[in-house]
Length: 287
Length: 283
Image: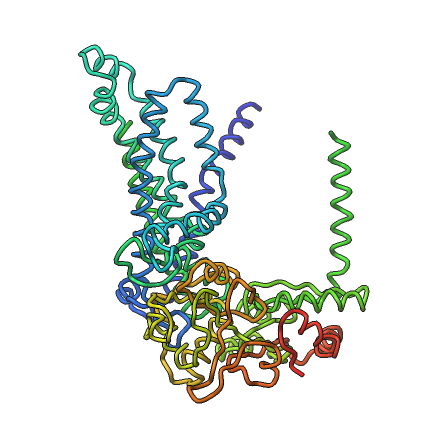
């Protein structure tokens, strides 16, 4: 009787475990089925490197290079802002902060993670956007920079909590050894702890970036959504995610535009898959 | 604990009964965001006059409404543009015959910041501004300031109408497009907000959205014609050059309750509601 119970429970758990993989595969098959149809009307090269995105014209121009560059620029900007601050914050929490401050900081960061992205987008639209416009004397504040700053807030909780975890799991005797050899606290952090936790920190950065590149609502509200190839971060951009979100509601089902949006989905899927795999590789290297 | 749960369950049961019952004589109206307020006002009045009948109105955009009509999930599609050839053939493939009725008119206002000295533009100038050929306000008699072009997203019927009738000047062979540098904003309200805080911006939306925080420019068909402001009487008498019809689409000619609702919308009372919601009556 106990054996049967054991067996049933084991198999149930196995099914739950497999379900997520099964769903990922189903999603990918669905995306591929709908998305690949676009290549009947436009070659993969022209799709990925075409410079104009006019999906509802006759004939439609389906080049997503401005969108890819837009997504990458916003993500890069967000990484440049959030990575140094995030890692510094993690170091402070893990190594320097007294117990009380540590708890306050940690719950504050968890709270930051809990703010819905549409709220961040709204705050950005009414406060950050006019501010960016007047500081840089731009014709409009709806720029990639505004998006980057807002998304940096979204990436920060992920980066801080995983990096802090990585720093915390560095064996205690590393630190004790360094201090015993006469290193100062800062030297210990900089020369011993950070290198020892580096793979975990890289994973933290990758997961943070993964969150940024998939973010939709906030970027749609504050980046201006012009499908131009950006030359500076102070220009409006249109991201892959915002394009899907803005256009999917209205698209004629079965048109080239519809298939093109699914193909954008494939591109996004591939990008975030690559980022997650990289993060995973670094996490495993650590162990 | 058990009592609370059972009370909740019983409530849920009765609520779902109450919701399920009217579904039988409920007309689903779906589509253009521009028309949601208008259709909602019609539906409210109609349900007051005809108790026991239900009209449910949802937005989503003209294309969303038409594709729901084609897939049979709504009975009336609201659209701020004509149905496309592709949609007609798709509908026919599924055995749906779209029937079109013009229910109201909408004047599209071109708006700028009140601090901007420019207050009149010709259609030709508008076309050049929105396609990116004119990039500075001094080229149309304003300050030396870069023009920031605002547009609705491509899912908007307003976007399509503006492109076809202003940028392309009704020429079906024209290949003109919005400048790629145009900021595509998700709603008319977003355009209004950006106009309010940006002295160099220009945008467009339905007349109903004009407020004292934005300035609507007077528009002329060409350099020789007079400049006309977007107000109701100029749209009715056809003097204002950028106005468009708003449509209801149904599968086949309307019958029964749907026809009754149509007749109400086109009645004198229905068209007065059109005026109240800042649109323009068809008659």
